Length: 314
Image 1 (cartoon, rainbow, N blue to C red):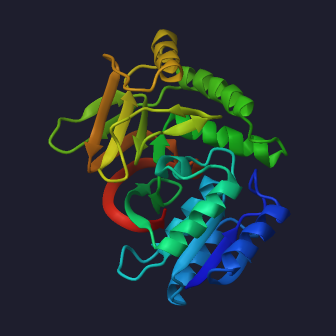
Image 2 (image 1 turned 135 degrees about the vertical axis):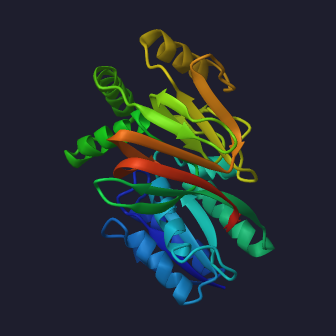
């Protein structure tokens, strides 16, 4: 088996020593090549080249952003037979994709699990989400593995990225502070989204829209945040959208999500757990995030479910 190990040395929990242990372990079972990323998009370029070079396996070692890039590289020309299998060894702070797959979020344990999968030939097919957006900032097409969204969550991602550019660590406390600041901004200048899903009338004056490809939506340290608990890699997409952003509404939903295992309900909530297509439009540009990475601003975006898009070593 030919394998490519794609390492993001800047990921939160990635170390040179850990990378060397991982590489040594993999090299005992496969013919291994290694790429360390040096620019945004490098992981995607390396994975796309691996497809052309007929590699059997591409292993992403980094955070969810690295996994997303590798997936987008492997599927750059669409879903087709013979694409390399994906392996994941978490090295970030959240590692949502690995957690949703039931893989260990600890890099050492995940390495052992990957070696077992290679030895025994165990894998599974997973569905993915596809984002197509347009707006003043241009058009974007991107795969996502666990979630995407427009509005508040994308504003938080934008704010955290701005803080990280200043040298701040992407800690849970930074996300909480940024979320509060973004909420204040939303209250002053609320989004006015229109959400369309198949066979239903449009939903207007929506304030935020989160789309899930699996459960959980994300993690807050070890706490799983579950917006659409019935959504999985075997089905279609989950939609969580709010028509109101008042403090009582937000407080109630946040408290519910933090204190329980999900299944939120309410009059201001538009929620669907298994839809194949979601379209969101806005009269003004709104931020769009995909798997925790800011894509840019858009005025219209389509989220599409693609079942059994990728094979993952488990």
